[in-house]
Length: 607
Image 1 (cartoon, one colour):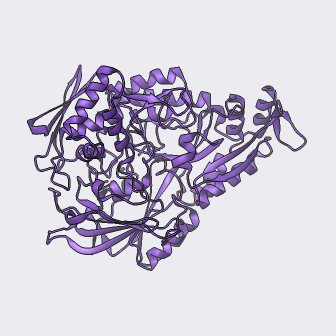
Image 2 (cartoon, rainbow, N blue to C red; image 1 turned 30 degrees about the vertical axis):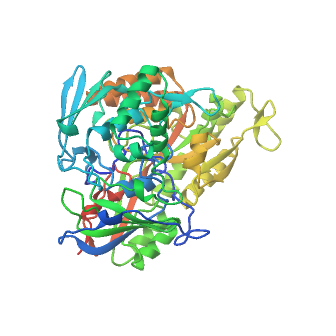
Image 3 (spheres, helix red, strand yellow; image 1 turned 90 degrees about the horizontal axis):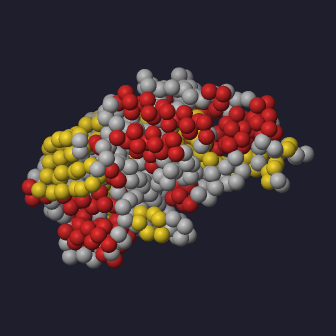
């Protein structure tokens, strides 16, 4: 959440702002299976626009289990770019392009009837939005929404950070990559034609303007008279070289106004797709019904319920009892065998664009020492982790040696080099050469500071817990004292705040390479460890502006080699994706790129 990686409808793809971390996290919630502590909070937000009115749509309900709580209708913020929200928004927030079940980008012609790269010097892209495309309240979808998407994600308008030491965007964007290359966004044809001009070329332009939110709701929430006032406020801010009070209100609402905490406000509930949220019961479930204002083909099933089951081990039983019909759990060997032994259940087991990794926090003085990071990499039991925890799920699994490309891609290169295999003796000699001394307790130290670190991970997750246990045991002979640091708030609090030593999670996204700048580029919104390398930054400029895919992959491999050289992160394995569903269902399709199976939920139906 996240890993680079996929289904059959254009709506709801996180393409342009970054990769999903929470998606690639773990069993994604510590919430109760069925009830919320202190009582549930219910939000009935859809109103009259949540009915179907289509006789070809079944009035039955399909229930899916999810492991993480929904938090916001705006997935483009750094706080809310998560798998949990991707599940919900898959058929709600529109995007011009989507990843199909082959992992390829495909145009959603129901939404954007025509998209043209009309020029490459300067780069100009023209979007023609379906004349019938409207938000659920009847407001046309068009220029104002795209314009808001641009200014919210381009990082132009900034403010001082809380500590006053740096400038940060006033919009809480998950990533500025691609949007910062755009010089202007113009509308014509009644707002249905949007012309985007780039100051600098951006090869992954198809990934931009995904999961857009209604400018009309943002304008109203910010107290502005109309959507045009957003553009006026932005232009005035650019002229003044500082955000106006009006633009600050727009930014604040865009960043926080769509949150579902403690409940989803009816006035912000929106849909530009074929489903809309009807009810949200915090700690329990979220219900989607058909959006009767959707102009395209109607879904086959009228109601889809996302039921929160925070413990992955409880999901198979819920599936067996027909309490849910689809589960997409974090896999482990015992869980897979349990599912394969169940009657009336179909199991999809694939490998997509997601990978597990350990990340270092460079704010920790000890971890800022490359010798310590290299020694950790040398003691890390990557092969043992793969053999014990992943091969039972996929007997062809290998240790990952690349962060940008995957073993199934022809351009993949294992670039681990001297760190490809565990070497305890070399780990110790690396530390001793850097001035660390082994104490009587078996832990190396320097200047009185011991190599004692906590590994933060999301909880609960049996597999990740085992990964930490294996790592702690393997690195103990190398002089490290490692401990488990399970935390349900790893993605919402710990990573963004940088309050951790070593983090264990996964990235999930797509085959797009430009978005990785948010993770590895200096100052990137998802660069939680604060790694910085000027050579990598220069290569990212090339990566983002290149249209030749061969050169894109070559550049990606060059950046990965630099990450290995500095040992900023350590990849472990490609994620084994797991989906199980009732054999009474039709239309469930695995997608290797999208964070959620829900991307084609409009095709789900009972036989």
